[in-house]
Image 1 (cartoon, protein in one colour):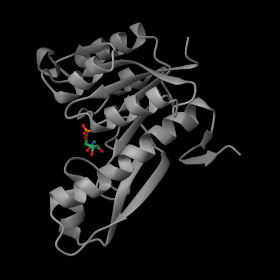
Image 2 (tube, rainbow, N blue to C red):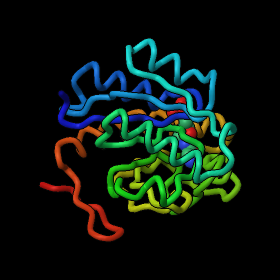
Image 3 (cartoon, rainbow, N blue to C red):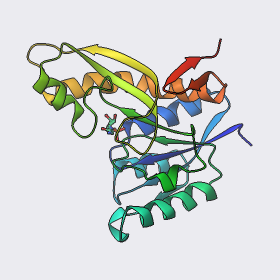
Image 4 (spheres, rainbow, N blue to C red):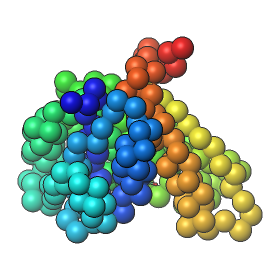
Length: 204
Ligand code: GAR
């Protein structure tokens, strides 16, 4: 029985999921183990990655539900049935409601491709280019009911280069995402963070 059961929520390609699966296999997640993957969309590559790793993979198609509350209630019961201690949003393109988050305080995290609070929401690398910033990166944060507004756990920066396109900047950021997300999960499993309001401190 792993000390921390991790359920990963996905909607797409799942390269961040892959980085977690690889870290789990190599022992880099410490006492954390990926016990399930749930996708809000059918037919995505992330599901193939879970199956290839021998991890339980389920689809909960958000289009089959009348509203966000109904989807979140079903999602919560799936997550609970997997015995999740930690829920990781890895390219999960849905905003969770208070109904989902109630009872999961400080146990849901998200990875976002910008240095929050800059550029929340969709297509963050495109937003960064539109604003002409010279540094961007990625953020892992606790999830609240806002859009990418929860307390920040860790960040990694990358340069924005002349001639960058949305794709080249996104690819540079993804390299850092794949390093940062497993490191944060391992640290959380080891009790390495303590939140005080909006500030998250490392436990020495
Ligand atoms: C990642 O860049 C992740 O940060 C982003 O979607 C991508 C998913 O890639 N998430 C968001 O923009 C959430 N607001 P992946 O499916 O290959 O991990």
